[in-house]
Image (cartoon, rainbow, N blue to C red; front, side, top):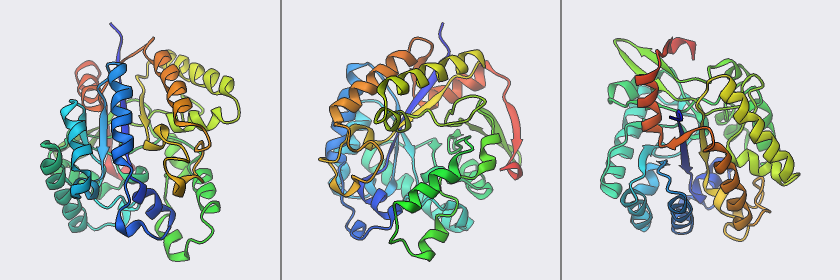
Length: 321
């Protein structure tokens, strides 16, 4: 029997990318969910995959997105919490602000999808001890906001380079975007946070063992813009490293993995948006085929429960974050 690994999709909407980038016009909440949701659902259905969609509460609260979000639920994919306002600086939030953020998201998701989330991923991998405390108090089963990589500062520098009009105040909010160098020392295998008398399972977003460079699909597509062969070899190598180190990966998708510059002109500056959407899905299909040679792909909830059942998970204190 193959070990269970997981696949998820962070359903960041057009407005959330524009907001994080500091672009004007995000306040009207422009959306591409009516395009990316049917496209991604059809892709997953063809491959008989059930994954986790991490949904932003603000999108679930808007009637124009109800149909798209309902489609996800009706297709029996897991619904996860991706915050309400999609601000990747949750470490700046007070506990009361976080409670309000979670309540609004949960209420919106229950109304739009008919489901309450039990898993959370912070926007921009944003996390803090207070976030973990609130998750535990609200009976979440797992978090998957950690990205163990050393190159976060480089990713952030590139992001700022591509955002020359961003104000100093906006840059200050984003100074921990994508994490910090020391995050590369975080574990790749699932573990548990000790939060008072409670525990919370952490499912890290998997990076290349030892080297800790990203292996999620947006990164692979970026590599493919230089060399498809190199991207494929890199991913095959990453899978072998995971197998050798007994790591069941948790990998993620983003909406832009299913879109190109013609679908979202405002986001053409993002890496790999010059690749046609059809080409992106062709490449992802090949990556997933390689993935499934070694692992059974399920949603993150199943991955978390499998990890608890089949492994003695290490315990970490939230002060270590």
